Image (tube, rainbow, N blue to C red):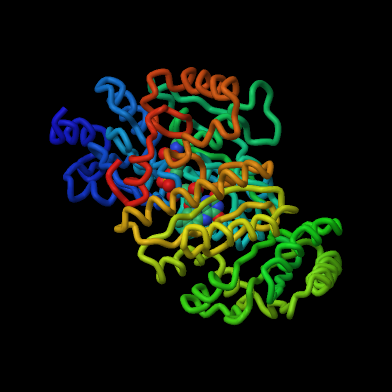
Length: 475
Ligand SMILES: Cc1cc2nc3c(=O)[nH]c(=O)nc-3n(C[C@H](O)[C@H](O)[C@H](O)COP(=O)(O)OP(=O)(O)OC[C@H]3O[C@@H](n4cnc5c(N)ncnc54)[C@H](O)[C@@H]3O)c2cc1C
């Protein structure tokens, strides 16, 4: 169908102001936070579940792919329309529909920005626990699709632990309700099936989330090290003592210096690594655990352990951590963020391995980890205009992920598979596992028109395509 005709069909559903179709408008929607591009044929901005149903039915009639898009902060290419079709933008579905503090839950549209939900319930003493570092921009719909985590995953779990129910539109326009408003719901856990399915099974149009009570006390420690290995050893030592911090983050010295220059958060410029450790809970317990954690840091040769003296100081430290990717973006034309998981006890070994990769491939790698849950984010700096360098980056990234798997970890901790890692899925799943996943997908999405080419291996990947992709080329 010609672009103008598709525009007319979509405008009948969502109004002219709710559709983009000119190439210059579509440019803004041709990529997410992974550097690769592909334009959809049109972007439609629904306001209601009914709009989504009608768009999905139109797409079925025209045999077009449908790709949902939240804020486009995804790091695995999930919301890129790699096979064209209609992109569903959720920026007009950003209402908090219901807040029920007494029962600790809220019902929201998928386009609600993660942080806005916490801000909306803050005065009542509540917050929404999953806190991706991108929380000022990313949406609850995107979080559900990616099963996102964040610095506080260590204590509170990931998105799936905070979603009670969903409204989902299936590829034939059928609307289903999963889960319930309370903890348990009989029957199969369909909510669990949709959370983390990366838009390949259905389009989420409403989410019932659990709200958490703000802790009585919070203490934030900054442990400063002259040796990276001492910082990584501390991570396992803290949890071995039976202390579970709410967050336990690590940044290496190279990253820290970039972060400090960008954010002036108060991080030291001359150390090898820091740990950002947060304790939450009842005042007495928090103080006791903070003292114990401080002692463990010192036993593991922390040069200094600082405590945030005010909520402003705490906010500043977190601002630095949560803007770390952007800070590295200031010193390099491009960077490739890896997202892998290993058992946290193997962090010292892994850091040494990454140091070896840096030397082997002649690249700079900044290390930012959700260290407490063994989730690594090595950021490989490079220049995407240089094809040879781009190829080296992909090889280095592949070795790092391969090592994660060998250590008993996984190919992704929170950024999802998207189309970036489909060909890595066989590293952690057997043919039978993947076959069952394909059968589940074909049950919900029989023609494969919802987010095609994502999550499951398609056999379409090839080395050439990957190089083009890393270079920001068109897939
Ligand atoms: C600086 C930075 C820091 C980050 N830090 C973290 C972090 O700490 N933890 C973490 O987990 N991630 C992190 N991310 C990755 C990203 O922010 C998360 O994956 C986030 O959940 C994506 O949300 P989004 O709204 O941007 O979704 P998008 O990128 O727009 O989409 C992501 C996926 O969700 C699907 N989708 C979106 N909306 C719907 C819907 N309504 N129904 C069905 N499918 C849908 C899309 O099709 C796509 O597959 C970070 C990214 C950046 C750029």
